[in-house]
Amino acid sequence: MTPSRCACALSILFFASFSLSAQAEKPAANRLPVPEANAIEEAEKVVRDTFKADYTKKKPAEQVVLARKLIKAADEMKDNPPGKFVLYREAADLASRGGDLVTALDAVAGLGHSFAVRPVEMQLGILESAETARVLPGRVVVEAAFEIVEEAVRGDDYEPALKVLKVASRAATRAAAPSLTNAVAAQTREVEALQKSFLALEANRKALASDASDPAANHALGRFLCLRKSDWEAGLPLLVKGNDEKLKAAAEKELAMPIAVADRVALADRWFEVSAALEGAEKSEARVRAYQWYQESLPAANALLKPRVEKQLAELERAPDVKAARAVSWRVLFRSSDPTIWNTDTNRSHSHFAQPLGKAPIGFRYLRLTETGKGGYIIIELTRDRLGEYSERDGYAWMGKNIVEAKANHLGISDTTWRDQQKGSILVYNVPFVVGYRGWGFGHRVGFDDAQGFAWAGEPVQPTVFEFAVKAGPLTAEESKRLLKRKK
Image 1 (tube, rainbow, N blue to C red):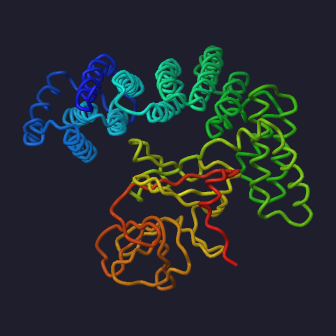
Image 2 (cartoon, one colour):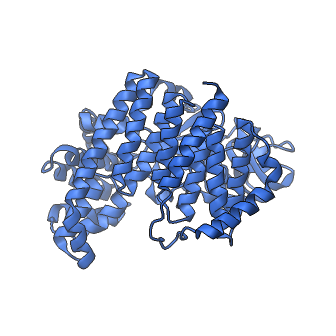
Image 3 (cartoon, rainbow, N blue to C red):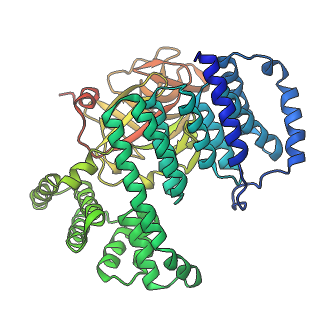
């Protein structure tokens, strides 16, 4: 099948799945109801008339360009819900025609963010279409599936998540990559187990809806969220209201956000003790939590505490469950070409995503900055207490405050030896009237206080999507090569 025929097949399959799956949910507080059919029909006429010249172009690449143009228009549209709905819907269809899976999924994400529809159902349709038409490599389909599943599980949407994993399984088989097949199988087992646990809690959810203070229901749901879904932010307040005194005490210590090193070590000890009474996945999660808090306390530990913390860390690192958790992929905190969303709760699309820094995992040791267009990345050592600050260490500077200066946001990594400031250079690390360095990330253009600048390895680049992610470690052999080493 030629590329153009593949794209056509993908579009036909997608459009059929879209019409079946774009069913309205009850409007959420922050999402609009799906517009009436007649309003959608009128909006479609306006959109096609506005972009008449673009619609005459039929090459796959040209349709992808139009899709991106429509997404941008939809993102910026404020007071025309039918128009916004049609723009996203048309963009998804056009991107599918062009065989661009990522852009199609971005359009659906925008639709789901703005309207009361089930995006996972539409994402499933796109993924099934892509795999049936075999437009993309199997690995690409599997990676897209994992992102969809992660979001679906976050919303307890397990049934479509499992359907997505079935598509991923076919794609992994096509890719003839045992590692992918094993990863899909492991993810499937995990989602099935989560679904079983979630369904078993139906009575507890009803009890909590009737009485928010119900101790047994709070305990059951808090335990599920913390020790099965790793959703500590949502689960800890429930554990505090629960009827398990040990879990309650540990949750209370967590919510107090201990700053003193001794308190952090005590919290790690508490989770380690709690783990002894648990089994299976819950035991593993509690041990991992203990490990993370020991990691969090290590940098500032004094001479008395440090040996004990290091001993506990060494013991836990030998445990298979902790080893597996440490090997988990990077946790993305930001992915966008728009630095203004840093440290916000934003999830508009794959390429427009951010989490509040308070949600960053405890105990991480490394930060990775990726230029997603070309795939290049660098890594620095960074602890959680420095994440939202600016600091210089070991010859490199980290700017995490996202300071606005010279009409630009400053966010990223710099080399402290790159101080030359010729006209047009991008200063990523910038403390006004004190110092500025070139580097990797967002900054302002020297001599041009007029626009946001983008830089990579000290040189200006075209606007691009940067990704910031963190990890506890260990680094792989390849990642270790990308670690910006300390300068003596």
